[in-house]
Amino acid sequence: MADVISGLLVLVGLFVLSFVIGIIAPLAGVGGGVLFTPIMLGFTSIHPDLVRSAGLAIACYSSIMAGTVYFRQRIAPFRLILLASTALLPAAIIGAQLGIYVAALGTWGQGLIRASLGILLFLIVMLLSVKRVDWPTPRCNSRLIDVFGLRYVYHEKTLNRDVEYCPTGLGLAAGLPLLFLVGFSSGFFGLGAAWALIPIYNLLMNLPLKVAAASASASLAIADTGALWGYILHERFHPELFIGATLGVIIGANLGAKLLLIARVNFVRRLILAIMIFNGIQLINRGLFEMGIIPHRLF
Amino acid sequence: MKPADHMYAEVTRALLYVALVALATSLIIHATLNPGALEELSKIINGELNIWAPQTLVDYVPLYAIYFINLIVPIGLMYVLPPLFKENKPVAILTVIILILLALTISGIIVVKE
Figure 1 (tube, helix red, strand yellow):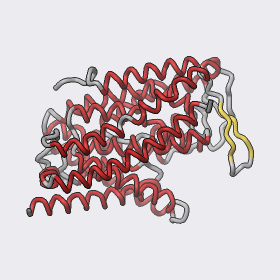
Figure 2 (cartoon, chains in turn purple, orange):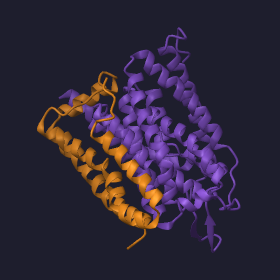
Figure 3 (spheres, each protein chain N blue to C red):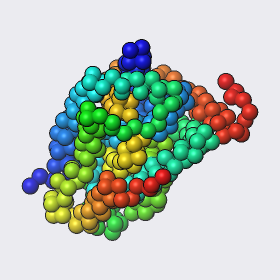
């Protein structure tokens, strides 16, 4: 009976933690999965496979939810996302399979996942501070754009006019290999990837910032569905953890999106970036210890 | 016929709401009828468990809810294939490739055995 009660407390605690992560993530400009996975891997003893499958589920279902809004409004280009998914999907499947294999190597493998995720967190923080372009001039003269029908128009309420956009042909060709890396990291670490997709869509493919952000949110649904099936078929999930965390973050993220309109975003954003840096240091510290590279954990 | 992106958004939204309700319901049913699942959570938090498979009949309730939510994307893509073929054939062909890859993954054909 005591175990049941403590399990119930774990479930409630997990839901509350996920809910809080869901609220604060939009304030920092990241998805819930980007905070959930590193925090759980850095500060709990839950097995990396179970954390990553739950993190992947959060990223995947949030992305499906984003698509239901952005595809209708044409802020996210459906055909471009299908094209991107041809690179993201196989990469995410490979990443998930390799992630499961590495974690099965034991403490060393789990340490490798933690340490490399810690390093990735620093890259995420850096990419979040890269300057973006709000309204790049569309250059829709590539044959690729016509072949795949990637010329889009949507009505921008803040400008009160229609905005035409399309990716550049060169950006598209250069972006697809990068998308492969993004898909791989999403499957391997069980992370969302808007942090990487926004710069690719905005700076490389020349999409307006708003379109890039919406597209990044809606991009991972297909790829992460494939990666998730890898975890599910390997039985690397637990229903209570999986469902509790997913519902917590999704409900929290809806509230967070509303809070975004009234909160002092700059302060919260800096605070969360500081937490991510501390989380990154903790993951590297713990990972290197588990790999046997450092004899003691520094803290 | 509506454009493919509108149809995809509509069908995935409807399925997602049903799936989220199914997930929440299955969690309550599972935790109530199988207290062993809560005991497992205590083990999980200590890192003693990393694998889960259904043992009892009630374990299939959350499992099928999870299967269902993970089928939303393939169902949505299959649903929009006809309008997509009318709108843009190259993208429709890419979508068929995506669906084949998803089908191979879901059926376990390209899942690496340990």
